[in-house]
Image (cartoon, rainbow, N blue to C red; front, top):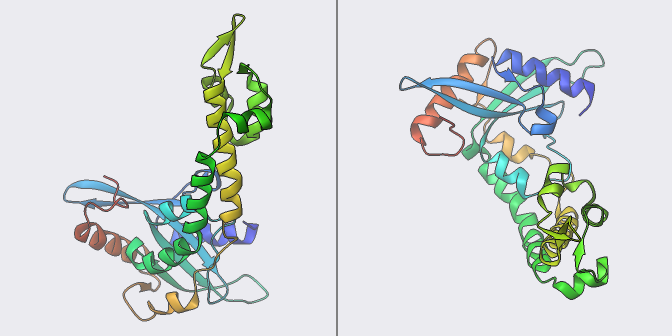
Length: 243
């Protein structure tokens, strides 16, 4: 994310009265919205986007994890001018997960087959494949696992993989090492199945022009809360509604 994009999205967070998540790039949650419903506080995760065009960029390496997250979020999209100076906020859309579902489903359909293939192929690996890749050993060390799985695990996860001993030292069994090999194979295959920054299309966004989802100043904060409350009342069991 560029500095300019980050500044625009912070501006949107302030305008809509959201709680900015300082760790948003790592956690994948830009902001949070809290509303009161039936005497209780409901929380929504919010995806905050800005655009100087008619489409909206999303993320690099979009996979099934992105699909799952998007289906739990409200979307706030700000459209800015293309002026050479400081871009001006022109209009905003506030969209629910159900508003976004047709587009989300279209992205899912593009990657679902490849992700299914990656999962099935990795499960086919057996001990002979492990021995070919990592050498035939009675047990394996954490360093052996790190050469295979690299930075995909934390130090604690590698420590938790130690499920046996050899000569009094904690080691990784053949069976556990095979699981790590399968995870690495699945990760590599899934990286090839991701999409690089698929844009929310103009066709999809234009369906909300002139509707209650297109909100105007100065009623941004009130508008998103009304949309969130209406959604929570109509779909109380939706995973987007965190109670």
